[in-house]
Image (cartoon, rainbow, N blue to C red; front, side, top):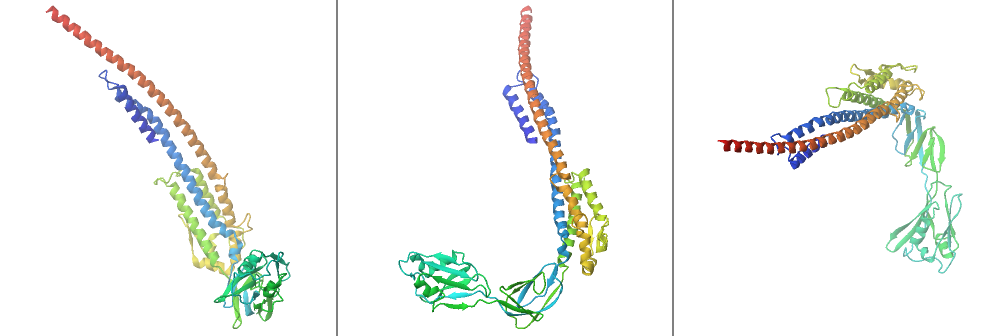
Length: 468
């Protein structure tokens, strides 16, 4: 707004210079007009200052919204009961393990005796991968591929597609459940390999063709096609119990919620240990406390009257948000074992921030992670500190929440001030135009009076001279 006011003042100066105000009299009318302009524009300065203040308040609400959303994100992680039931596993050689929070803890003897493999068929060596191998001129040539008990996929081939390259491309485009590739085994030596996309004994490949030339190379009746890798199931024993699967990914073994990915055959039985893990829960709780402290810093920054950013120093919205969160943090929970954060080694200090005693927190999680879960998660609807915190913050940050409504009031005020500024600016322009007109008339009048005064003076002087 200051730029607009300065521009208007410069315009007045230019206009008064153009009009030549003050040239017809001893009055400095240009200076007077500029002074009047400055007085009028003080009305705009008042409005402009209000606009700046309200815009600063709007920006502060945005900062408060962001700070609360960041805190809510950290808090929401504590509403997941799986976090407190997390498990960890031993590191093993022949397999890797994934466990869900529902998996039972325990130790198991695992011995991988065979990995699941996918069948691979290989043609005899060809001198070129671009030489046509089919019966020339056959118009309805097809290649039929079946995997396991699935339906046959029939692939039409032109003469040009009966090269190794053409056959491989046609197979891969057919979604037949196999992958074809060309292997160069030596100089001018090429072989076509066809591998099932699924492992296991049930996923063997059957190939046939109504083109006798291709059948002799690729088909099941071919005497030259070989099986380079046999289809076989994965085999392992768990605590002495034999288990067989078609895949190397074995689910719910050795218990529900456990998935083994077999990577190699065991040299000897390995011990798989599944135990509780509090690492993630500990980190999440400490991150939540840090987020709470960061939020308190934001409250201080936005409400400190000694700082330029403290535009919400007397704002009831910020004060209400801060007090409600503090009150909720101090309210005893309905959980059986832990009622308040202090019992978990988390202290609310006099400055409003949280301090975490790592030893006490780890002890609480180690001794009774389920009880800590009850404290933070509750029923996941209305009880549990984290559950309640997330719900409370949402009443502040939702699209129709406390902050949004407060911002609406500020936006309305800014809109009103903008209209007021335009109205006052128009009024000032009209007033200054009127002043200019009046000053021009005054300047002309003063010029005429000066001319008349000079004339009369000359007449009197002439009369006096003639009488002497």
